[in-house]
Length: 463
Ligand code: ARG
Image (tube, rainbow, N blue to C red):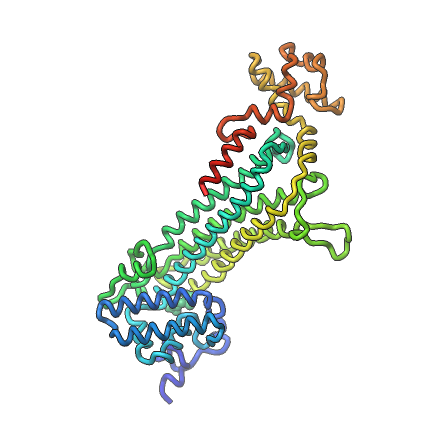
């Protein structure tokens, strides 16, 4: 029995006396989940092989055999006929073995000047680059849906809240546009992160580089990387680019979650501000009257798992000595699930926005009930020369007076209002209306409908 037969049929088993146990095989394999890197692995291998040929390490005939073999493997994977084997550990060894079956010695030459360590780092970066582009597209779609809704509601008044208590009247479109801003920053963060993701690790080999005269620039160009990882040890070991992505994803999910929380509140009959179309809600198996905003609740819930993935990756990295450690195999599932969860959440949110019906009357009634224009009365007095703190006190008294009578400030008679300041005149009622209040906040960033329209137009252009 040769050594190889004793130790199992792995590309690295030459130095071993016995194969791994079945449990260890299962425990150490990643092929069940890193299969998803397959096409990126093929792209990387093609670029590597072409470079090896260009610098004279690989014969033209071998390159052709490799190209042909990898093309067939790609077809097999796409067609679902490729046989994945747990014995071959991971996506890289599975593809390499199949290539050797198809291309013979040429397949065996592919791994010259390369290690799985720089290979996997390259694959993950290619995967993440594509994922970021997808996330950016989905974010834009969501932003467009937001603008579509906002455009219809620049004049719709709702109570703006602080501490979830009625604060001041705002345009519903203005409220929606707050989320547009958050999403714009999310997109900026992903675009920034993409620059750091888009660097080529290949050439680092196992950790120290390679003794072959490789051309890393050529590989980078072929794979669309903007530059090279400049230190071989760093190239194979750090996953900060994935952590960074997960941090940005957690933040974007947090934004979506806040929005969902509001939709859920607004759909509650106590608010009754909106209705979410039935196709985004589910019922209860026991309470026939129920209509639950499950989609919004699930996005809010999934934010927790994305936050968890971020912590998992940070924890994975924190005590690793340089350079590559098998720990890093654990980067994939959290990263993949983060990408999947974020993409699904963005897509379903975009659809759901289209199914939101706004109850303008309920919003207006709520704005009228909470003394939302009290600040406007204070500002009115200040404009007549009263110091702000004094005006604040006078209005507080007026609110208390109205509260005792169960009415709004605007419902009080002029004589009643005058008790709180002799400077109050007939023109006060303009300041006390919801529209008057909104229209007066017409500076950049304010809620005046005319200003919000400008903001929407600007936002449209930015997309
Ligand atoms: N499946 C491995 C991973 O995901 C590939 C790299 C393996 N490298 C090694 N030296 N065992 O990290």
